[in-house]
Amino acid sequence: MSNFISAEKLGHQFHDRWLFKDLNFGINAGQRIAIVGVNGAGKSTLMNIIAGELDPSEGKMIRNKSIRIGHLAQDPVPTLTCSISDYIFSDDHPALSLIKRYEEVIENPDGREDEINHLIDELSAADAWEYEHKIKQILGILGVHHLKQTIDTLSGGQKKRIALAKLLIEDPDLYILDEPTNHLDIDTIEWLEEYLNKGNKTLIMVTHDRYFLDNVCNEIIEIDRGSVFPYKGTYSYYLEKKSEREEMDKASYEKNKNLWRKELEWMRRQPKARTTKSKARIDAFSDLDDKTKTLRPNQEVELSIKMSNQGNKILELHHVAKAYEEKNIINDFSYVFKKKDRIGVAGKNGSGKSTFLQLITEQTQPDKGKVVVGESTVYGYYRQDGLAFNEEMKVIEVVREVADYIIMGDGKQLSASQLLTKFLFPPAKQNDKVSKLSGGERKRLQLMRVLMLNPNFLILDEPTNDLDIDTLNILEDFLMAFPGCLVLVSHDRYLVDKLTDPLYIFE
Image 1 (cartoon, rainbow, N blue to C red):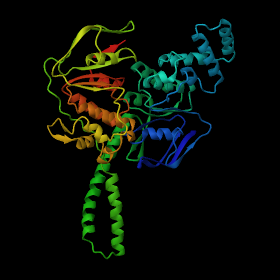
Image 2 (image 1 turned 120 degrees about the vertical axis):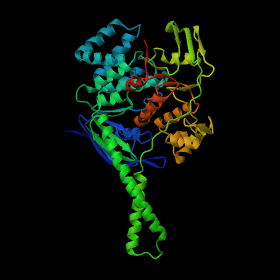
Image 3 (image 1 turned 90 degrees about the vertical axis):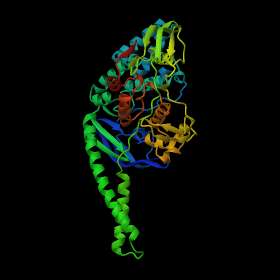
Image 4 (image 1 turned 90 degrees about the horizontal axis):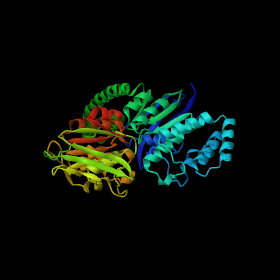
């Protein structure tokens, strides 16, 4: 088995905090690995180090120089002024250069027939038609059409799809994929699954999509409190083995904690004159102290926010219609929302899902018909594009903008600091600036801000993007028990299957 990459004693520090230390692992040809771990554990950082785009704080990465590495970052493609065509076809491949010229000529309404014929001959001579067909298929499925458009005019979702298209066209020896399903519709996700399963591709990925993870990967690497735990098998197998490991950790923690208490008493009682024997015991106590800190059981996000009372009239849509530039988004749509409605919304990008959400929250007005919102309806709207946080604000200041105290589901009153702790922002992190948070931690903070409003009508637009799987499992449990209305827009098939009925599909 050919070795692609080896990591030796790898460690990385971020803002004076070690994300991980002493990691040792290898990636061999044909392996299909998923990296899992809580937000802020260092998953994206590790992917950047493997890709060679970031130097580790300590240790080294040894890469096989003969392999080509392709990296889809969590937030790819900076603001470039070049065209989509120049970006996608920037690879040093003779056939790609010909295909780029051919696509540009046929897209130009003034393209000369003699030039087109000349390029057709060149493509035939280079045996590039099959390659051109593959590229057309990839670009079409990922919704990349206007190749002359410049990168800086695109949305974040479009940039991600274009970066994915470029990677698939280049077909590297090692695929490094950070949240590849973000901004893809369900049909495209299923196509990507099938595409990655063809041939003997080697890949390492971070994904929150559990169906995708199970269907594509057969090995799991978990980053947990700075250490790596490998599992050979599917995600379901990993969950089973992780549960066993955590039970053992918990038992070891309790045993060490009891011993620590006894030794602490001895430390307080011991005389000042220290013998060799007592010095050895002091050193042993120091080691035990470290163990009780590192083996402390994992905390989980706690979601139990109080819900505002809901009246009989919740939300009514009467013969609503909306169009943009002669494109009908919604036509003569009526629905009266009932208590405990759980509606899923799906459809291709640009089909009108976001417009529908803007209509029901009255952020945009219908062309025809009317939207009637009940007096007691309190929306909690989690947006796909996130909140525009002030990067210089402290985490706790972001929360105090909403309230200093919050009523929980059990009636208890919590301070902003106590609530942040329940959302896995410990006191030390609460005074960090927003700029220090990972992408997933920002999403968790955004979710917390939404739930602090005590909504009785939750609207979640792609809530799974960039959240870790552990937080998603807890969010699912919370939503299953949520007594209010739920509208869920998601490409996460597992979440939609589990939480919603009926499903509105925009076409």
